[in-house]
Image 1: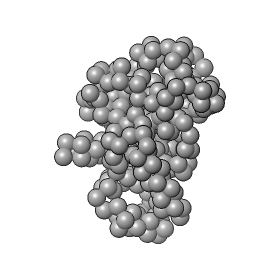
Image 2: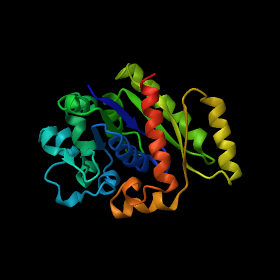
Image 3: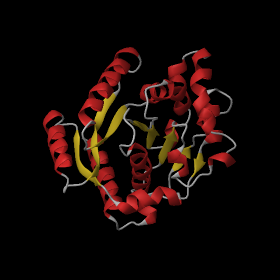
Length: 254
């Protein structure tokens, strides 16, 4: 069975989608069968993986509504991993799904049909708490939380931890926090260093050692529809995500 990891933070702009794409590419580069699931209606993970949303015949939208099977919606990327892509229509799914039975378990049920075909599934969540995020947290066994080392980081984490606790109580008791990863880190910035130290103090066992730096090539790669590992494999951003993938695998293996 696949290991399912939801990548989430209710605060936007923290490198969540960048982490999803580049972790998928890095894990695939290491020889793992990886499925990236894009549950954000903006579809940035889809576009950043080189997929044209407007040309899709099926997406996670149709899967969640039961209009198509998940195997028909999954497509291979050029970068060794597969993707269950998003579509702008997904924005309307929040309303449509309110009328459906077991609305928070629909992604979990769909993923169970293909779980034996992958080693790792990464779910890129929307930066809000809605039925799509709840589906992701219900389907996942673990949560990976990207955190930008800036002023409101700790405040946003408090809210997210409460959400995870509620999901554990009501929907998914097996859900665990895999860890927090510091993104867009600049060691020359005093505030970034201070927030990083606060994270180490409050989450000593859950904080990944790997730091994802603020990196120009990392920021440029999505506009070319590529993971940074394909865009510039030698840059600091690419090397950081390879290191994060190795640390994630070690953490899973105990």
